[in-house]
Length: 367
Figure 1 (cartoon, rainbow, N blue to C red):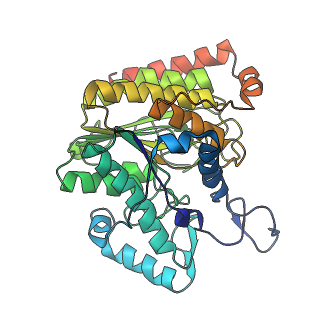
Figure 2: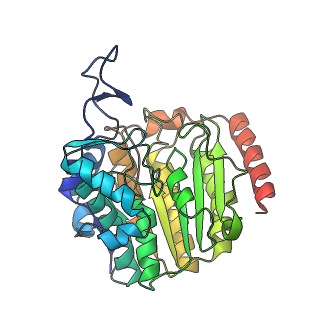
């Protein structure tokens, strides 16, 4: 067995029309500013770097079929899927907030969900030790009936529902370290106790009004949702403290059959949509910690699903470090920004401040 890497070139062809950052072109917004941040190059350059370094040859590269209508309906209402498909067939449009897509966007989104679903399936069946799904468009902001934040289908939720329906996993933990709050995944499991959702994110980045530490779920899901909002400027030490002090204890207490990471790289120091100072070593260490916990509590069953990350130059190095750790490869690609970013890390006073915030959050959460 090995680490599986699930990808498809068609996911790179997904497009959202003419944008300047997150603003649609028109009026006073001039064209030519590079398009929507969720472009294909961050993902394509990661895949290319893996091929050049030799890491790709060590992984089990696989594809997948589009998620089926039955799989999608376990999360998304038929009315939403039908409206999406109709608009997609007619040339594209925008169904929610910051979710533009072109002709065929429905099929690419279903393929993105299918990659995540098949990655989970292969790990749960024991065909792979663990896996990474290079899904695009991303999914962690998509609610059952409302897409937002570049996310058109709830990839991870769809994969979880498939695993549960097939009897391959019943209790699941989702750790989201994308810099933006995983509001969509949270919404999908808000009132359920069998799926723990943990989100480490920059406070009030996106969405502006979700992700509070006080939001713990409701009904049967009370306590099965954990938000870890962090102030802008948190770097390597603060993120590892959040993992060690809050995320891992919560996952251990949940005792899942499977751990899924919503693996966004926009907490990286060079990201245009985040204000954090994580490095390639941050992502390596977070992956190693979660991998060790998976080995301890759920037979190593771990799947990482790609979410955000918008620095074309830096994401490939963050992702490569993550995959080095996930696969246990001896291949190392040095991050050319490592020295600079190491010198830009927060000082001890700020790290101590973050530790205090995390201690208060841990006490409130009973961890």
